[in-house]
Length: 447
Image (cartoon, rainbow, N blue to C red; front, side):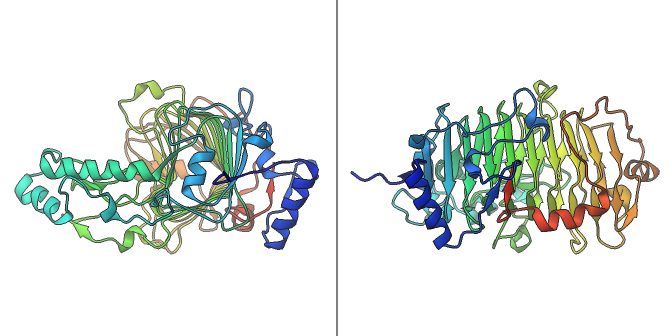
């Protein structure tokens, strides 16, 4: 019986046929290794000293995969099968090439699933709004009861479709510039040694947001799904040359209920719950609110000593906050381009959370006219951040000094560490052109 996905042999003949196929389909996917020789991106590994993911042995993903564990996938069902199953814990090295679009909201026969496909337990938005209207329910406790139970059950039913788990020793790489993960949440949970590259992540939308009147001063709608989640003690993860967006469903298009936007998206790339040794490089994060959270809770003190993340050469385009927001971690944020000039909703870039130790270096910020440089930083319960070499709207600015001039208590620069795993830090003035010419999907991948 013919398999539902193609195992690819890397014998000489098969490799040549594949190369011809790629050429005939006009995939712009030429790849060069650091030595300049032709290289298959599925077999590339994280270069030495390329951020925290290079520590303690580095990150090789599925580069050791045999031809029997090398796949090209074009559907959700094929992707899940190639990963070893819905919640695979396999450690067998595997390389997965994504061609075309993978849709999370799709059944195993390829049929599209809509929000109504997941409704169970008598849930309806109108009934939910009526039950938990602050004038009825109040603002001092979270929703409970029939409609909240039905919402949670419906959300869980959607999660069973859109959450796709990535096991250890896996490389997932998109072919060309149109490899899309649409409406799905890739989860790297309790996994080691994972590489994810050249994918367009779009619109991981939760059909069933939860209202929480106790979240902040006015309450908030909270959603369940990220585009990419790295969590539960996962280590050695490299996220490179991807593009993240809400696509045709930006939060700005959503209605408001109880005075708050009906938020159907969570993070674009969140790193939480003891994850460690992660490098996030050359990605585009665009048109999103809660962009990147590192550390999920002030109370999760077991995160101390973990959440070591490097974020370099990424573009943050029309994003509102969490670029990133950090708790506990030693996070090196350097040579990133914050392209927020036309974004009137921009709130802050770097969130200083509990026990965070951000080392921010040579970042280039373009912010809306009238937006103060001191507001690029936001202190939550953190007390330290180191900043150096930054440019804001074309001018060299000491961000920490700007923040401290406008806020009390002041933040300290004494983060207690300096980055080790970095080869070259580019001049800040070069950052916009470097990133706009090379970040995101569809570029030549080098390793």
